[in-house]
Length: 338
Image (cartoon, one colour):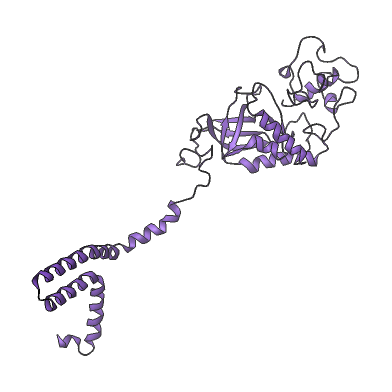
């Protein structure tokens, strides 16, 4: 034994003994304690009690030591994977959170929102303007959606001039929902006369229709029977007007979406002059009888045509027997949503 700890061998033997001792540390301690008790304690009863205590110590402490020594790589792997596996979802209450993520990023599956089965999820594929988008309802079913209850300045209709703040409204709509998953909520009507889906739109917990009005990128536009949230939109518009937000502070507004002067029965309207049906404000024949059959917006092909008839007949926000001005708005603009 002494030869093992002599010369240069002793450094190797000591190092080896330390490594083995660390690997089996609890058992080394237990062996030393057993030897000590055997040599120092003469009372057999006390000796047996101490042996039992040492055995229990070795059982619990030794098993924990073995687990710690034999699985360091597993613990390291789990810690390395933790950041990827435990992503924090900051929108756990969002109405538009997808039920499941498609394995293919190019295929969106039809589904409804977890928290509201009345909300259909859709992937935004194109921003048309401030209040119109194209969406994929699932498996490539592309539909055009028109926001309910709001109207943004016109930017894409070739029959109308580019209106004040139209580019900003389109940019804001793009900022809020571009390429995202939105929730679509139906009111009463399924589509408008152009086949566009009429929907309330959500991005997460944000109500897009209301947000556009509240920030001054759109104004409230009520068309029964789709008036579920119209009180919210009107309040949002009042607050935006008061705060001169968006178009209310940037445009010379007497109509909600244009910087032109107000169109009245005594003024010449550029919209009336663009009417291809021959209606005018200079005493000419109006398209329809102003006192005959009641007309509605469905009888006109465009807002300009409806406005021309409205002006030709001398209708105003206070005198609108055919209700061509949106109910509850009273701004003198006829059929502004077509």
